[in-house]
Image (cartoon, rainbow, N blue to C red; front, side, top):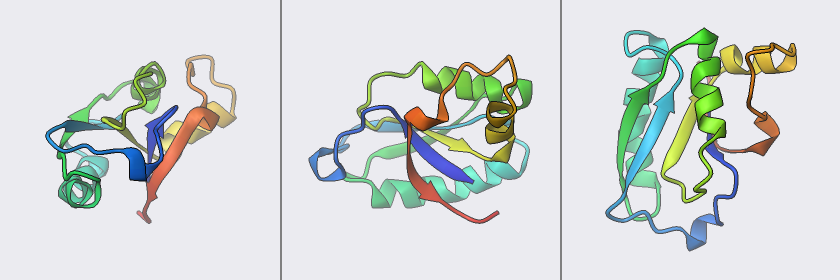
Length: 116
């Protein structure tokens, strides 16, 4: 699993998320392994991010993860308050040219990677 932040996140040293809420978006349902993974890492992310923001897990299942990935691509604030948890289920449709894909993985900035 990989987490990414959309587009132009400033350098970590410049970011202070104190008092903010970070949405950790998972493109799967709240019942699967990705949900367990996200709920395990959410409090650790809160501790690790500058300012120790509240991290909430938001589920956005649909279309084999492309629904959530398409939504994430549209988030343009770049302030670090939206993080996307992705996996091969998101990368393969992109790599195979799936017509449902409206996202560009090259625009995303990886912030964490874990084994599954």
